[in-house]
Structure formats: C-alpha cells, structure tokens
Image (cartoon, rainbow, N blue to C red; front, side, top):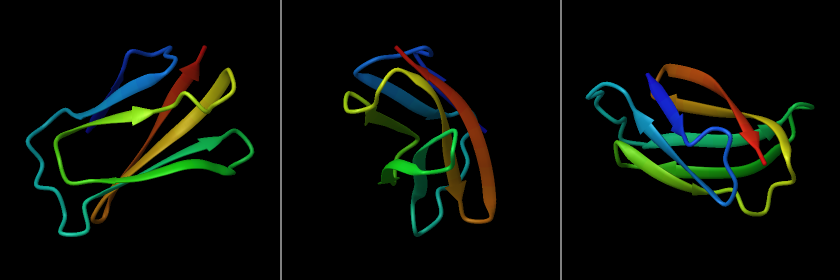
Amino acid sequence: MAMLTPNPASGQVVLSLLDEATISPNGLQIAVKDLTGATKLSFVSFAQTAALDISSLQPGLYLVTVQNGSDFEALRLAVE
C-alpha cells in the first residue's frame, strides 16, 4: 500500500502510496510513533505522496502508521 523513501532517513522522508488508491474523505491519517507506541508526529494528507519533516526526531527506529479509511498499514522507519 505505501512506501517510505529514503529509509534510513534524516530531515525528511517521502511517503508514497504504491497503488492508485482512492484517498478517503478524511485523508490519509499518518502518525510517527516510537517503539513504546508514543506518537511523536502526526499528519493528514490528501495526496498520493506526502513529504514528512522528521528533523525533530532523535536517531532510532520508528513506526509510521498510515490509515486510509478502513485500510491500515505500519511501516518501519530508521532515523539517522
């Protein structure tokens, strides 16, 4: 459903939908969470691609969750 590039990243990462999915009326609900489950960043996007500013994140591993209507996906992100 989605892909993060570059990964690992620092500063900015781009989230791209891999298919031409219809984005729900509420948009893509995007959250960046640390490994304890705490939400560090959250975004809403209405586009097939979204640039996420991750410059405030400390180096480490994070989960990026993407919800599009009833579809849900979690992606691993390494921040350098």
